[in-house]
Length: 259
Image 1 (cartoon, rainbow, N blue to C red):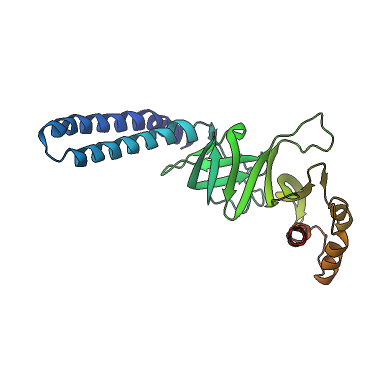
Image 2: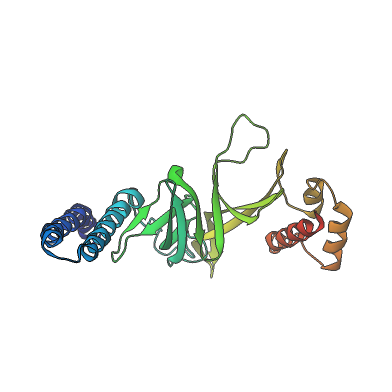
């Protein structure tokens, strides 16, 4: 089945631009004759321009957005859970790819491989977006940005995709990842995917992982007392289950204190 899909996908990549080009050529020849013969040349010119835009748009998507390798699901049968962010099904999102912005795309995000995946329209084929060409992407209501790390810089984040929770003078980022673990369930050895979320705070001069309120306050240049008071009043917890939400609420409150 996969072999058939791959052959169909390669065939589609070959004939789509050719077919569109043929249709455009067939349209342009009578259109040119109409320009000479018809009185309303403006209407003909507008139609030709629309056909050209359609052809260019389709060809652009084919050669720019779908230039990655095919994504093959590597999940071992019987493994509990999945390797994707949010769910195994595709979610509507957008991507900034090679300087262009593409919206309303069916996307998935593989957290094991740190890999955005795009479903090919109308086909049971998925394409891996080339990470180096992705500046950012959205998935549902979540926004992810690509951070390029510097191995020689102290406190530099590893290169990869991070969810941007709060953006401003102080940025709050979270690195989502998944790994396969062994677990004993009903007295049977079972494989399951487990997700971890590492939280980072970035200022103009420092970047550090945040695991508790004390570490967060240490990176805020001012208003530390007000932020700490707000955390107590709101009973915000930095336990693993609520750490991301609590840090996001605190940082957004911190933004309201700055001029």
